Length: 218
Length: 218
DNA sequence: GTGCTTATGTGAATTCGTTTACAATCAAGG
DNA sequence: CCTTGATTGTAAACGAATTCACATAAGCAC
Image (cartoon, protein in one colour):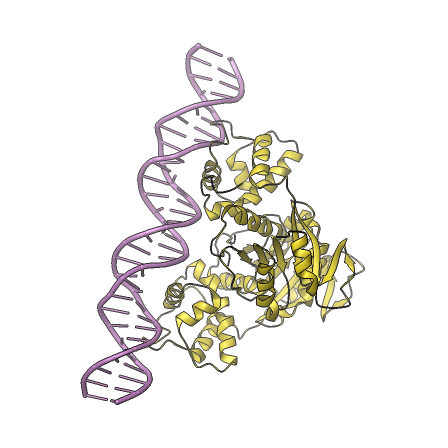
């Protein structure tokens, strides 16, 4: 499922889910074809960048015509492995964690939070939006049994590293880290940081120092 | 307060709050000096990159010695404008918005959510963690009166663009957008996107296609 | 078919960011 | 005051990502 394909630039890889989402919406609105210029307008990525991104996968379009929506949809569905549902564990069911189990953006896509863990006894044993909350002590057993290899980390930052160590030990290979801690993990494990207060701080810095500029991020 | 300083690369600017936070923690732990190598270990940024980043602001350190923590702290406090508190509005008090008003990461730093807006009458008039929730109809008056120029956008995606238009009209110059919508705004307004489901999707893509690699993201 | 229009795919140029590698400089210790 | 060891600051090399610009090919109209 991996390695033999040509390596896609990371910047491109990060945009794929964005493309996929918009193509889905085009498809469900019944559109048949789309040009890189239209895509550009919608996802706010330069049209040349879009064509270049697509070209890493070969010729997906036709000159003078554009891209066939159905075909693109099909292609991205396979490329992003959308047939298979990825089970995700949520570690730390505080305010932010609670928002994630409730938020339905995870029920779409191919990712699904199937279990939550917390140390708080009053939460353990409950179910939130259908997701059972277990005690962190049960993590090893449950993670291994269900072969969960992606976790969302929303614990207090003091626990971030030790919990991450546990997760790695239990077989997790991807962590979406919402704590401010910069985790140390083996390089077989992929960590993406989302640091909310840093995002806010840097937004403010940009506002003050780059009065007009195109949006950044991702 | 801006423009005359030399332009800092965006990649550097995004790391400044990260540096600042760690320098704060060094300072409160009583450390007097720090090298780029130590900083590197803590924030997981190559030490040469750190030295390069710092060098855009002139010579902050001393050769053979490193950086004086007190001095760095002072410097970043000014550079990141930490004396002044930035008031932030939260637009959309759903699950995610609720997490933000409760989360104390905003009470630290120099940013503070001072008001929330929602269309749900049952929320309007209440106070959450000390933050008053108003009806969106009052947005114009309150935003202008309090001269709030930063907003966190956590509304349902269908409302994202119209609400953003309103915000811009009321004087907002920075939006932290948590909706999947790609906003169209004048280029005097800065938007940072945090798209949670895309982050998760791209994490999974990277796991599957780049089995071992250093962490990306911010 | 023929020609016109459109929009792709990509080589080349450019911009942006990171990393190497080292001369310059300073602190500290004798 | 001299030497040693440490660590900066940056020039140059490299690498990644974006953007320009256009030859090429496909659709479409007549």
